[in-house]
Length: 107
Image (cartoon, helix red, strand yellow):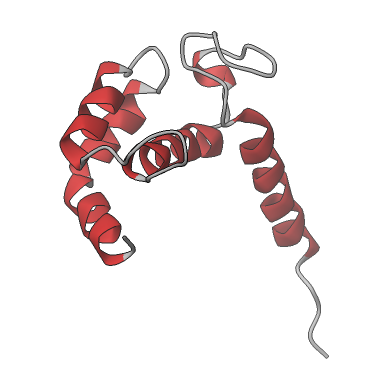
C-alpha cells in the first residue's frame, strides 16, 4: 500500500505560504506586509517577486500597455538591491534568453 509523504506535503504548503505572504516584500525593507529586509525574505518569495514583476511589466493591463523586454529588464536591473535580491537579479540575467522565449511562446 502506498503512503503519502506528509513531510513533502508540509514543505510544499510551507513554501506556498511563504510565497503568498512575502512576494511583495522588498530587499531594502520597504515592502509589505511586514517590511522584511534582505535575507529575512524567504528565497522562494525573492524568486517569485521577480517573476511576478516581470510578468506584470511585459503584460498588457487595462491600465497600461505591455512594456518590451528591454524596458522590463532595465526596470528589474535598476531595482537590484532595492526591490530585488541582487543575486536573484543576476540569475534572471543569466536566464534572460529563456524569459524572452517563454514570453514569446505564451503571448
